[in-house]
Length: 295
Ligand SMILES: Nc1ncnc2c1ncn2[C@@H]1O[C@H](COP(=O)(O)OP(=O)(O)O)[C@@H](O)[C@H]1O
Ligand SMILES: [Mg+2]
Image (cartoon, rainbow, N blue to C red; front, side, top):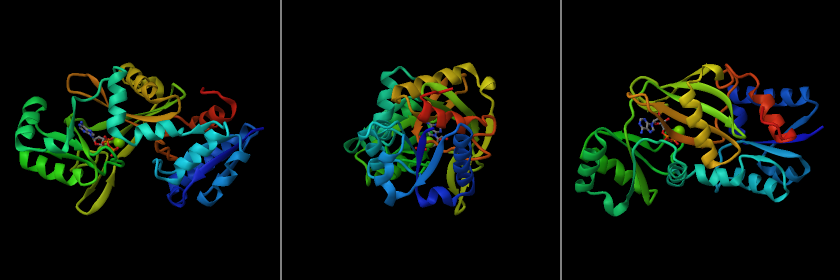
């Protein structure tokens, strides 16, 4: 029998779908003869008493969740997410660098430093990559610092806003598509797949539209139905980051090329959404952590 700690924050249990998912991990563990306990921030010191740790909270090197990951590692316990994956995925510059080094296809991407935010550079980027362009701040999450710009003026305006918090920006070719593929990968194997259908009036999976937050609708896809090129690209992208749990976002271009938009550590797994066509996600994550199995 193993004992699994799931690190949660108050917001993790506030949303119905996330709360329901937490109970599914517990049920899955109990069915395998294991135990699951939920730990909150003021219980970090209990981590060494468990056999493994699963983090279900926002991960960032400046968050308590990072302390939880480090603590588990210092005590030699398996942990998702490991601190290295957190560090890589929270910085898009670092993440794209690793993807490109591993030969993973990403949209044509350029790095921008502050002195490069000029009309001449903007003109050049539009000429090279086409219009519109996508601008991203390295720390963006939940599509918060990702904007599509059509003109040099918009490029400079958004660039100035993003440079307020960051010393580097990412500029990408815009890849039009009605949905993002989201592929879950665990320990180097496919875990689940779905389509995140982009809401109307935006190009990203989450956006504020007319003052209200809109989210992508999630459509589960059985792993057998996942196009092979998407599956292979997702596995390669995940392997470029590590051997933990990742949610890989991909798009298929108009010419049929698969490009990786992002690798997320700590991907959302909501009951009734990502698990639609993969009800074994809970069992697989628990056995990976407690029994060292990925499938
Ligand atoms: N180059 C691109 N072309 C078209 N859409 C994009 C591009 N990059 C990002 N997006 C859209 O914006 C969303 C958020 O971008 P992403 O890089 O994943 O940042 P975040 O970390 O904030 O989620 C993506 O899920 C995708 O739908
Ligand atoms: Mg994303």
